[in-house]
Image 1 (tube, helix red, strand yellow):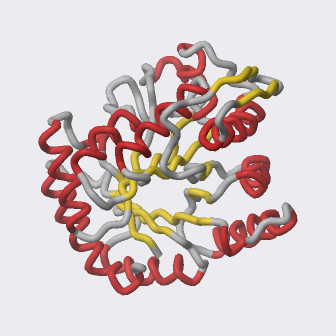
Image 2 (spheres, one colour; image 1 turned 180 degrees about the vertical axis):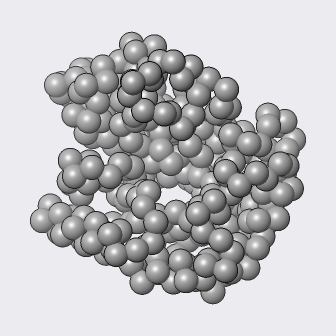
Length: 292
């Protein structure tokens, strides 16, 4: 499995030097990738009254991931840069294609683009995008991204996009850039089985998760694709998985044939970048026998 670190941006601060040092430390520890979350806008909790309690608010800091990765591309040499996930249907498709290609070029082909449809209707409202049809639009967007990354001139009219003899230049090193998806509803799983290169599940290790993976791989097979070539990135959260359970949890993900596992250090009260790095050091010591 390829072992990754989740960038703890909600607790990390905004010092560019600390962000650089964190990324270089993670790379030096042997992690295969850095994964960053995405929210363009934060909303006051009053906007969700009567719906649910949002996990993030207007007080939660988020770096824009593709801009962040442009910075990290210059600070690192080997580590993969992964969005986990970029909320695709609230963005213009051609602009995402251009920005992702640029990160891929500047990093020497180290971008993995994880995308999803999002949950925060307030962001869609503010960005003037339709929240209700976001799943259908995302499917067309992924097809358009791949065309823009791999074709000299794109000339196609879809349901939501019209591209007439246009391209992006430069095109990415990877043609196409790998596109993974998030989400857990059945519609989302069936969609990614048809069109994605991999999945970011959110469940913890256990029987229910194993059954979901089995269903997903069956749908991948039904789509005429190779389930063994379809990536799966497990997630281990320090908040829920204490140190004495790391080995068992890593073994569980390995037994589920996960291609990647990421470690999340947020949510347990770590106060400084150094404390996050110390936790990553301990986790990598446990994960090294499973890395490869």
